Length: 401
Length: 84
Image 1: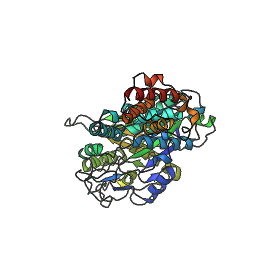
Image 2: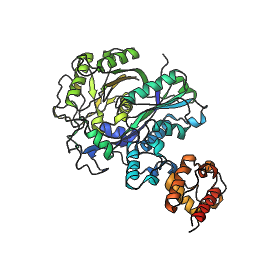
Image 3: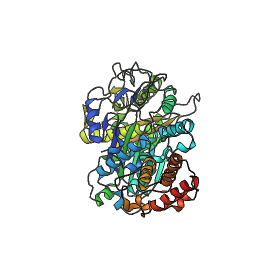
Image 4: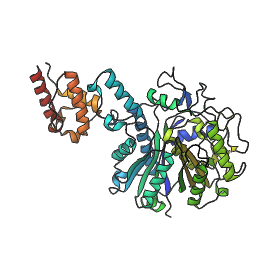
């Protein structure tokens, strides 16, 4: 199969703006979680979030502001960084030779909420015509495609947290089928009251108010996840294609991928995560002993953590592979979380260091070799990134250097 | 009722569809909206804002027929005169 490599990365995360700041913070164990400031969380069941606050006027053209949700603005910033990092300008490439695949969970939820508020409090004349698309799941793909002239394959995938890996895999397929360059991944989030209500009633979000105690995956005190916003977008090409336009450096290969769906609850059959890992490793042509680090899904819901720890134990053996969850510093970013983990994994391969998980004081699974508090230097040739989406989605992605 | 001026239009465009430095001069009067970077949705939103603020209703065709700022100013001022 044709090699597909990552030649550019763009990141917006609660603990770092841009790849360099995010990676510095992540290696230093600096968390971006804090009390929710976007609105008053009194009366809601959750109070801690991973926010990305910025002044959009300083980063985007005025034309784009009335028609974009906060998370779309973040996605546009990440897209620009990723393309610049790859040294690619799709507007100078042949038409239809560059495309975009993003993952989404709820689209521009906050935009939609504001327009509904305007409708009911002021009347129909106050509803923006941009509501027609600004709330829509594929909106980030569309806006990125228009802004950068990427008129090749364009799509959006929705599988909650797992969708971000699915988007990267779909982009890999487009590159293998001949599209010269794909931008893929996800930037997501919706820290508005309407969304917060839905998230905080899902049963998977921590009710704790202390940002250092709220999100403790694989910990005996796990109490759920913390929602955040942000994510990563990556540029995918063949090594030859990249070299042809003068780009000889890359971060690593998207070597393997698989997605599975859990059986219906009560069926007695095992969840699909194990099958996703086995199939992704087979797709990469490597075995469990070749995997040097795992970026866990790390839901923070005790029962889901146990399921993930058991699968990792079964595949890799007790303490058979270092496992980390840098998302303890960002929260769970809906569709954006897994691509951010992929970015972190690629930077790990580059620098020979595994970023830590933070705040985990009482590990609940002794068989799990969890990298905690401090980065761990390691010779890394490959990484496995896992993501599970609410409702039964499992995806696994293998990266090699 | 007060005349609808180019400044008023620029303010409405800015509110409804966003603006950059490029859209601030008299010499845009006859430049097609498409060349100024405003698509039909941007104009739809802008007309909505103008109608709301001026308390008038313009014909639906205005959004496709008024292709330059001058044509849109004329359409709005005609609407104001008719309403006045």
